Length: 363
Image 1 (tube, rainbow, N blue to C red):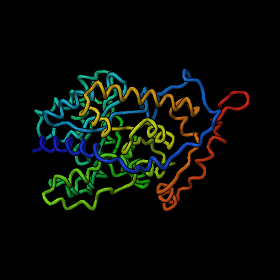
Image 2: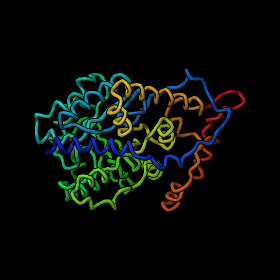
Image 3: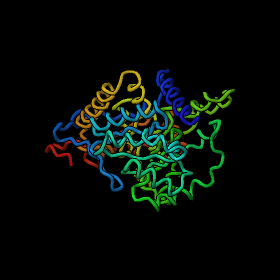
Image 4: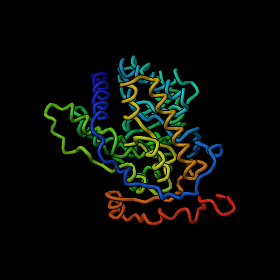
């Protein structure tokens, strides 16, 4: 039953990727163009550091799957792509492994094919400390993701209906495991209040996991006999909204959900993310065209990211957070309702000296 559910998730997620893309609130974020801001490409680095974690690039393959024969093959190919491009990678939820140890290889293949890469294990918020440690040990993981997904569980026919234990359990796991703990949403977003709570629980990083990418309410509704939860499609906050909402909370954030291209990666970094994850768009490429095409896609995104940093005058991904941004449309309305003043974003270069001075200095 679990293996079938995992295969259903993949099939329904790919179907979503083949549908019309529509508007995405990343489209409500634009850079102020400064024609003399550019720097030299050899001076650009893609390295990023946060919460004691150092990555060679700010792009990662986010949690997708595992637990069945088919998903084990997918994880193998994802791991190969991560190895060949140097991007970090996260496993899908390892709940299937805890229920049936015979599917361990569908997860451990991430490390077998990517022995020197940055690998994240993934568990749910009901897992015990012992299970959290088992997940880390199986993958020799460099970090542990705990996913939170009340909306998905609510729509899932066999999903959990008890959520009150999640907060204390996250705190226990964060205190007990020896690797950094990252709490991630699965596509409905983390609010400012939630990120603040995670900070106070001892979580090291929040993966905002906003609306705009794979919609797990829609996926689980597609598995229901009556498909009677269609009204929850589109629930939650977008990734750009979450990034703006989480400013100044004091917890490093990663951005995932609705990332379509290198420009969206650049926008997310400029909005304060230390790294940007994608899953659905990579899954579609892998399933449609194979691992070689996925390697080419990720390599292209990294090359384009470096090109955009060069054009914008950002030597590092962190420097993108000094570039001037304009916030438009429904995203601007969200900010107004949440009491977020977006006007300073449009004038950040005045104080951070991103633009070249007459001397040619950018500092």
